[in-house]
Image (cartoon, rainbow, N blue to C red; front, side):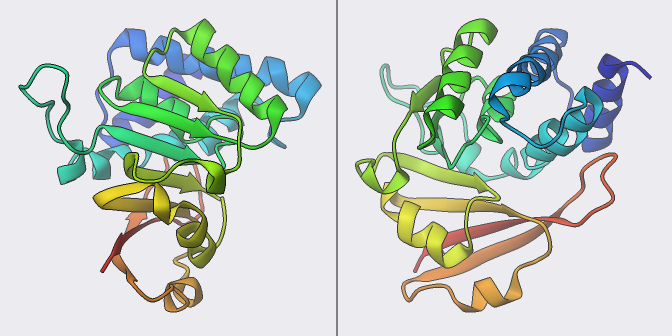
Length: 223
């Protein structure tokens, strides 16, 4: 099975119907990641097929959930304004995961990638240029140094335990915003250690095509 066929099968299993142009961009992202990985060691995964499953499809597995979320509503009809839910941040973004795949699949979302390591931010900037992604902003800084109240939603993938995620990124949210933590096993102990003033709104089991491992999306909000 070719990489394109693997992607098509994975998207079908997720119930995602993405146009050919988006699929081409997703494959180009994987190819760029493999190219940069030879020099900059952005990920321990070396093979494109595994990158597609463990990075690309894993990132996109949240889309069926997010598309049903009130945070992913239509744009505002007022010129110059957007409905709540359009301003997203991916903290500890690394090689742009999950932010870049989400930004490709949902060009209506403004995605800010926050990453403290310069070589990873450099890759993100190159991906933005080569893939033509005007809805991406790259910030090479620590998440705690980003001004607060700017985002409707903040997502992380293997970034930190939930209490640390809240402490480091909670200030980024607008009123009514939510944190989305992508995890493996459901982190019961971490949930029990959430700081006062925060609660888990949902723990959603994700299914990643081709990956025989548990995945969960933890949704957090201020009380």
